Image (cartoon, rainbow, N blue to C red; front, side, top):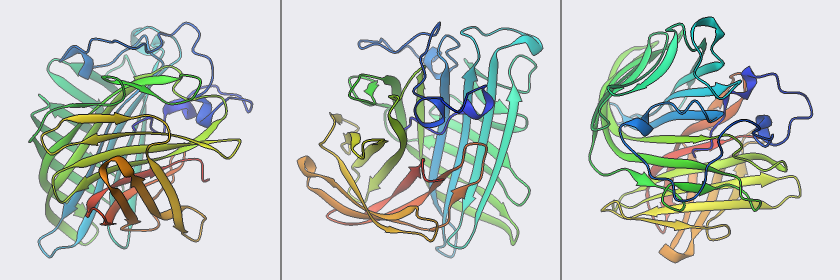
Length: 341
């Protein structure tokens, strides 16, 4: 969302940290998102060191020549110990990368950890480049290149944007709780993507569509929020839907959504308009089939995982994988779920 699985595994969080992965802890000394922010590009594609947490998060639905479905993830997270860039080994900026490839039968995952200030990881805005070690996402946000690798997979991809940036919430100010915690959040959900997956069985040329999320904040969750379920769905008629459900200790949920028309026009929905109800869980108790509704646009659809076992066994574990949509709307997308470990 993405409010994504973040870098607090790298920080000295105590057992009493509030919110999922400490994301509900107070943001003393850091900037906090406010309504009315004037986005400026290309600067806002880059890092915001005065905010505590930030990410560049891409997911893609792909197909091979024989029609096999694949999912792909590339993510770079930034987390700060102090609200400054710093330099060398003294920088307070910590970085974590996640890369994954999902097939109908397997889920390949790799993680990288890095320190900013020594060239190992970072982001530049102009020209745009996000990297950790030899993983990189770069380009002008119209034409991009992306690469990553793990012990048993690799990929090298080209991306071309076919639509505009989309801003979630109130012109990019995305509220996450009844108490008002928020982030700045925008997406590029219109990438065509093509390239080569390298898997244990060999190279596979693939094509498909990708969705890139940008988000930053300092305290995006409430203290009582224990995880989330995030959906990015692309329908066959050209419309798209981003929706998330934040879990709370009282058993209730906070929701938010953005309906994206075929021409890129975004309509935000506040808490309660979007609903996601689990229908089926896998053998580890993680929901892998959902009923998703947004009555304002007639959405009443079933969202089902391509691979039920797309578990990210990373420093902060979560489920992330491609999904298929059937019902009132048909299509494909991605699902991320945290708080189920």
